Structure formats: structure tokens, C-alpha cells
Length: 489
Image 1: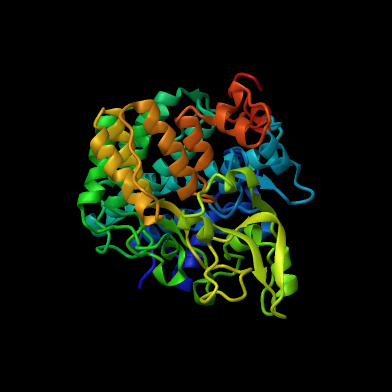
Image 2: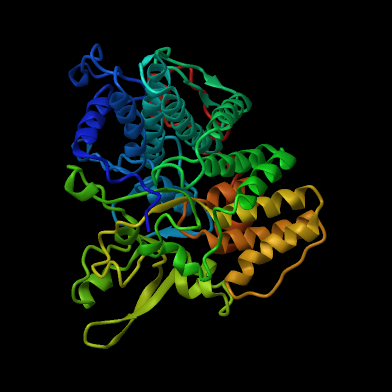
């Protein structure tokens, strides 16, 4: 089965990508590095140039930039770890990472290094999207393909701004290659309006199956629009966009939860939009291996099982959260590891609860280096988005039916609510169990108004209202005096 992850580009395209990446430095927001400039006078001329420009945006979703010594890809690790730690989902087990300790204990501030990295790499990738959107229109090429490339870039820009505005609130809204040196922060409402414009254009993309696997599709644009409308309180529009995806017939739930994470099912029916990892058949010269198993599987596996290597167990499941799973819930067994069998057949009982949902033991017996996809939008998310939108509209019979589609897949009985508070109670539990380790939890808890309640109940630590947003990184505010700071920081 083909996969929804762009990781098999020809070597020639990757060479072009690397040229595009050299256009600017990610060391500071929109700061240029003269030593890393290349002439663009003979670039953005051919169809191949347009393809390379768009592929460079995709490349920054997952790639590791060894030359800069950080995990530079959006979904490589820092972003989804942050959403898990700053919630009731994960605890930090990685020595020497105060940025993660702070997030897990809600003591983070504007100096947090993880937040700084997230800000920088998002704006770096937005810049690449702006370049593509600005320059591709002037290229003499097939008009249908030209429009598709521009809309792919708009989908990706919309996705990135959706991440940023949910995290930081009022932020600079830069939508052209030429931007002011110190842009002011735009109100969040303006950012959302631009996201909706970009994703509405992206609805013109081909549907899944009519475009190379791994690229943005009409279904991905509509699914993301549904999530945006849910966040902005436009529930009828959220419902319509989610139902468009459901009624397309192009997606569905696997019979078993674990099947959604099997390597042979990459790009399968549950994958609406994913970020892929791998070495493109040897074409990629920098580290492109996924970090799921490195970070989430216990170090004891590498010590006790022959052939397994580089499992570090840096981030772990919160044990109280794990204990909220019913024993009948198949996701408990399919998501977590509390013990394993060593090579000498001894049972090793672990000191923490680890997350093993991404490990396909048969396809990836070494465990540490994963070529699995990161699931940005799974079909289960679309189903639960539609359920929530219907509940917000007062249609509880429909909302309960779709919520129960996900519950029944997990071997749970039906649940019902006849009022919005009761439904949100169910949804908080269901989304928490369905999307462990998928970079969703902080977003869900802040949208549903349950961050303080859940974290205080599960982690037993106080959570102030200021933590419903993350602080604007202080380094960015020093570089750009026009940036505000969120209340409480």
C-alpha cells in the first residue's frame, strides 16, 4: 500500500530543496544570514523549480537539521512532546532537559527552549510557503499544476499558523516573502481568518487517490477546516466540513485501533494527513528517522532484548492518566507498555508506564529507528470533530452515534449524553484515550476548557489561567520589540 508521506523524492529534487532551505537562517525570526544566501535570479523558472519549492515545505515538517544541532522538523519531536507534557498525558524522564521538566510541571516561562524552537521552525517553514505562494504564479507551466502547487503551499501555511495561533494567541501574520523587519502581532481573529482563506483555497486540491501519496488533499483541507471552525465556535461550518470528509467514502476506521499504526498501513484509510519519515531510499543526507520509538520506548528494551537499539524512554505516560483506561479498552493494551519479555524469556516489569503505540514489532524489530508516519489528522479525529460539532448544535443523538463509533472500535460500550456538559465530559475522556502521543492533548484541553481541571486531578499540581496560552519566546521579543507578551508571563 502506498503511503501518505512525502519521503521518496528524487535526488535531483532534494538538491533543489536544499538550495531553497539556504535562503534564510532559522536562528532568529526572519533574520537573514548573508553567508547562506544563494542567487535566485535563475530559480523559480521551471515546473521543476515549482515542485522543489513546495517539496521544501513538506521536507521541513519532519526533517532533522544536523548542521544546526536541533530537531528542526515541525513534527520531528519537540512540538508533539510539548502538547503531551503540558497536559495530563505525559511526564518527562529525560535528564538534562529543563525545558521539558518545566512544561510537564507547568513552571515554564518565556525563556523555555522548546517553545523557542517551535516558534522558530514554524516561521522558518511559513517563510518557505510564502516564497512558493509568491513566486510560483510567475512560472510558465501547466496552469492546473501551478494552481495545485500553490494550494498545497496554502494548506501547509494554514496548518502551521493553526498550530501557532492556538499556542500563542496574537502573533505576527506574515503572508508574503517580503515582510517587515519587526512585524507586529496580529489579533488571533485575523490569523484565523487567514487560515480559513488558505484552507478554503486548498479545498480545490485533488481528493485522496488522485494525487501523489503524502501530499495535501481536498480531504485534508476540509478536515483541517473542520478543526479550525470548531476552535472558532462556528459549529455548523465545522459540522459541514467534517461531514464532507465522512461522506467522501475515502476514509474509515481500521477494525482494530493498533492497525492505524502498523507500518504496512501507512497511508491507509485512517490517514487523512500524515508526516512521513525515512531516508528516501538513501537520497536524504540528513537524519530523517522518526523519534517516536526512541523517545517513548523504555531503555530497558535495548538492554534486555537482542536486536533492539536506541530506545531511550525520555517521555513517559502519566501513570494516573493510564489508570483511567478501563481494562476492557483495547487501546490500553495497544498504547502502553508496562512489562515485556526479555531475550532470556524473563519478564521485565517496568518502573514507569511507556507508550508503545507507534512500535510495529514485526515490521520494525530494531524499534529505535522508526520509519512510521506521524498522524497529523486521523479519520478518528474527523469523526470526533463531527460528533462535537453536532453536540454543540444540540443534536445529541447524532453526536452520541459518532462518539460511539470510536468507542466501539476500542471494545467499549455505548455512552450517551443529552446535554453539552455531559457530552464534553465524555469527549474529554475519549479524545484523551484515542490520541495519546499524537500532539493533540493540550489543544483539546484548552479548547474544551478543562486544562486546569484535568491537570490538577491527574498530576496534582496547580495550573494558573495563564497556561491556556504559551508565552511568546523572550528571545523573539528581544529581537522584535513589537511583540507583546501573554498575560501572566
